[in-house]
Image (cartoon, rainbow, N blue to C red):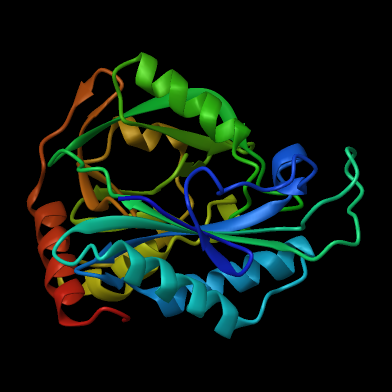
Length: 278
């Protein structure tokens, strides 16, 4: 079941529309969050809401009232009645209707909340390295913006090569992130993930792994060469719908799912089951 909420009301699919002049459509001028709904409850909603508003401020967007966003989320989740299943919830804020150029208009922001079934990921996954880079000095670094064209191109290339995700370097040749995930590598029993100054997004699942993972192994935010993907002992990626997803192939290199990755995945699942809004 797919449910739509746009600017104050639930909508049918045929009525789930915004203006063709909305800046989210014309220039990608918006921010968003994607989170997992488990057993009818959004997971880590507080953390996602915090990042949504940080992103909106970072983009200079008018920020809706938090109570209005939470009401919209609750309306969508209640209407879906997806208890006992996993669903994907997306909250989007755009700057609203505006001119066809980059200049913003004076209309209020557009708020959209959508819920649909969550994709069932395989137990393990594969990655592709790609020639494009993330700009760690971008005006929107650290912002979860709707401007995803670069990610779409990189992910299409990964799919063409039989991988489920592409991982990019930054302009300095450092390991950065996936198109919709954060990346972790295990070297000599220590877990490393790119530090935020590489230009990667501060993922919510990344944040939780950094908090919960030290119960299993030492964790560090590090500056790593992109080529570490081809030599690390273990690799896994994280996202709100993947949780902790072990990697068994990077390009043509096969990897085993090691004990550290298995332990972190088990610890993440255990802690996730303890509370819906950690």
